[in-house]
Image 1 (cartoon, rainbow, N blue to C red):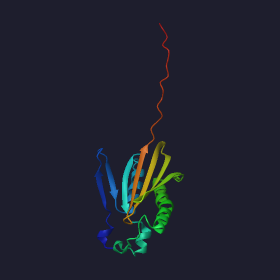
Image 2 (image 1 turned 60 degrees about the horizontal axis):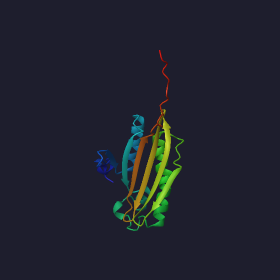
Image 3 (image 1 turned 90 degrees about the horizontal axis):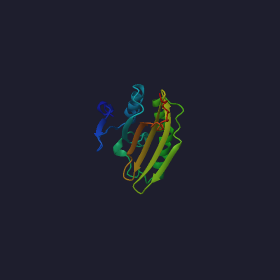
Image 4 (image 1 turned 30 degrees about the vertical axis):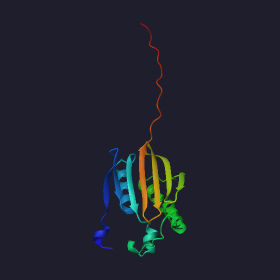
Length: 172
């Protein structure tokens, strides 16, 4: 890789609702962004995406994306198995480390499989600096390429609605 390839590639996309989302093209920039947002105390309202080729796929192709086989996609059981291991053992662990919350386990998880893609969803409730928030991580692989999409969202936990307590006013 040349020096120019090392430059982080980040774009900002505006959704129909007017929300701006940062889209990263490499894992290191994505993790650094999460770490910086945590240090800036903006950890409880972050929305970003990552579109990347997993490291194990690049390693097999000798770090050359042009040499990735066409069969490396969601229809390959080997790719799906390795991707799931990468997500659970590396990606989620790295997110936990960047957030500086060692108790984060992502126990609420699900998998949805269709002919076109596979989506893993991980959700967790967390508390950091006395602020409660929910973390949602969605990982999607497709039937036509080795490219993986990660959607990362944190949002503050909505406090329970307090019912007003009736107080009696003493007559004068």
